[in-house]
Image 1: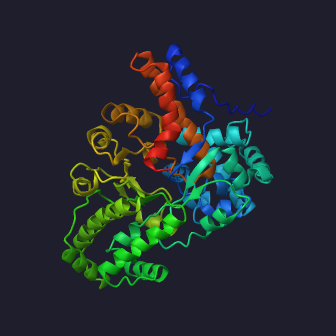
Image 2: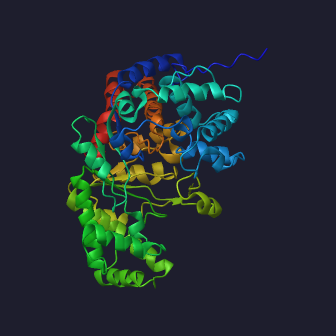
Image 3: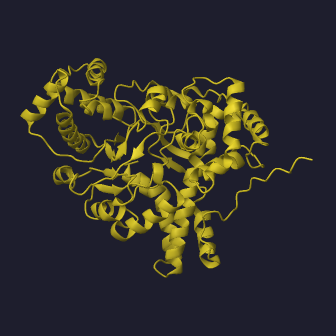
Length: 473
């Protein structure tokens, strides 16, 4: 007789403090915010999913293939990315089921990780799965998820409403026509809010082999000649205006370092011309990019878009994987970061400019207390971005609260950022953050550092008021 499958159970006190008295306070705090709207001001869910409202094709392409957290950890245990549907295009039923079986057969790999927390929450709370994934239950779990996806209440728009989303931001190339955003805004049957985010990284890196073609495309869509530096800057300003007209509230920037050294006008023009001719050196291209990041801040002061910065990632660390599968499949690795001196040129010019907002994210948590919190604790413009990417995990989030709060307080933090392509994991990620913050605040109450009514107000602020303030919502 086969063994009875292990149950999939979500404990109501998961992530709360172990001390019974503190846990009771955490329960009350979490209950007060559990049903509040989800504000998601940075992510990668395609707007076309909601504009088209096309049913999701299969469990694997929804829950596995787009989630590089899932894929990279399985790859670390010898699973080929192609076996998970990465780079395979639309999946047939047999291929989708085989990939899902692979995930379930390696379920022990996710023990102790936030990936397991998110994945189990999706399966149990969204799809009603009651057995733990493993090699013997994989097909049954797959069939249950697939049956749900065939129902109208699991289409993208219905899930947007079910998740309680009040805002969902996408991340978009400056040359994108934002057609999906336009169609949503003009659709009388749509009442949600989906906004684009201006992501100009590729246009600031003059050593990139595609930079010339990128600038030609920028000229074509903006109608501004990018043959010289002045035209290039004007073209970027034009596209920012286009994004604002389509609802954008922020820009997003990620480069290897955070330096923002400013060049003189003549030197900037000279380096740009060398880049246009294909003659620029790597060192010159880096100098031009650092200057252009400061220019992005200048534009934010003028047009009001919030500037978010998350440097310190070595993109596509494993070249053969990048060449086979492309970017954003889990091969990006953090590097050490310095912010205090790096951002001084930018903040000297714009750090106290009226209306300027700079949200600093990092995957180098050594800078939480050393640099980000002190910067946010002085500059009116600077907000400490939430732990994300490799740090949006329980222990890292707890360390963040301890590292940042004593220097910057709660009000100068951004609110939780899910930063995900895995649409169905959004509510689970936000609930994880709410539970951890409830536990942190409950500890302050137990230590008589806050009263419970103050903790309650703060819990609400962290969920709604902080992201609305930081991102000018």
